[in-house]
Picture 1 (cartoon, rainbow, N blue to C red):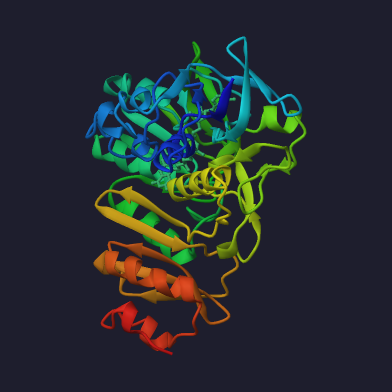
Picture 2 (cartoon, rainbow, N blue to C red):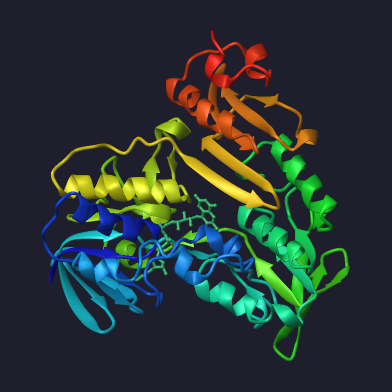
Length: 405
Ligand code: FAD
């Protein structure tokens, strides 16, 4: 029995454990994770770690010694299979473990293709260290890589592999990359950048299946009959939240586990945080959403822990995110969902610009490319929701913090 059990040793789980001790929680704490490693940062898996620029030690969230020093029991390599929310007991690794409070921080599993050939040995996701180590071990023998999905992870992987000298094809089924998360200006900019770096990036690309010979993918076959030869396939088409045991235990949810403003699920003593938690977000104008970001994982973990410690501090953090591709640093703040107008600030040709998203005249989000000042100063506008002069917003000579009504 532990006073608090955290399930999932990723970003949200690690932050929950760290916050418990920071806030002076003296009870027993265990963190159960199904990966073999102590908590590490996931974003570098498609960036510096994949590129070989950072070793694994450098992406650990805390040094391995941190956890025993703080009396946090790490039970690694174990998957939680069932939760009994009436008896406050879960099962993991064949054992029953009792809990006072449970923090569910299990993230999600990569959505995989369902077509023929999807299970070939050289078809990879990018979610865990093991996925990336598996790819890195083979890179020497590989020339052609096909990336399926033009979201952030697919594009980041494409950028790394291109820098490593591989010939990369990106297949995006929709008519532009980043369609789920960004406006058209940004999509078109990134498409052009990838093409300029030599990526064969295709939108509206409808694949049919994967050709497999001796267990290995040898080509991606398109619906129009084209055959794209490949030595490796990377699938970046989103995640499915890991909620099985909680939903089976009776938790409300659908796309993720539903939580309230304190990250409480509908089950007693059970909280959910991070990628798997579906919540009403003020910055999505109250819509029930899941956010897949380090910011959300950390801030929700802090909210849940504060509540366990008796402090009602509702989750209300402004979302932010980043993506690195080539020498381009994208930083986003706010959520553009539901915008009715965009303003382009600066010239994409200079490779430093921002896209501002407005709804009813108010700035609700910014995507800033190599434009740190806009990112930092724009945040206040997202928070204030003030009506601002749109001519000034579009003028990069006027710092965002000086833009008035
Ligand atoms: P995770 O970090 O995924 O941790 C969940 C852990 O729980 C995993 O180890 C999982 O294996 C484990 N688990 C699942 N089920 C069980 C179970 N039943 N029992 C035990 N353990 C279980 N975000 C950004 O903000 N910026 C970025 O640039 C960025 N880049 C990214 C690049 C990549 C390649 C990936 C994969 C993600 C990136 N993200 C980025 C997203 C960010 O990493 C996630 O939002 C964040 O990791 C979510 O934290 P989490 O704790 O909810 O889930």
